[in-house]
Image 1 (cartoon, rainbow, N blue to C red):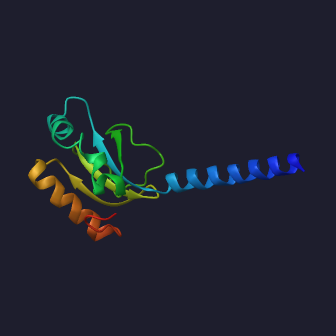
Image 2 (cartoon, one colour):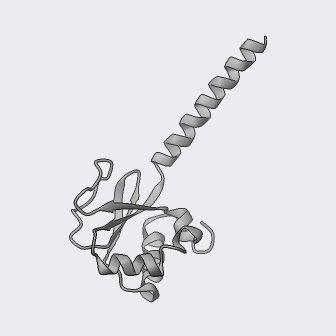
Length: 127
């Protein structure tokens, strides 16, 4: 009887882990396309990066960084990024929308909020 319970628990844990991994693979993400020596990328890192994961936007669309010349195969983009930084909102690896360039912290947050509101179920202040 104990062995049967143990196997049932193992099966449940395997199912739960698979569900979690599947959910993570299909999550909303904000892809930051960057490259070495990009002044605006460095500016974003100084002004936005420390706070981003702590915000509603950051929790709704966690940041994933990729190099402009090394776009992963799991991303389906409308077009190749031409500028850095480029911020690409993706769901299930498919591009929904993007912000090209970094206009400074005063403009970034309103642009990102509009991007999320227009393309997802994001609601300000309560993702």
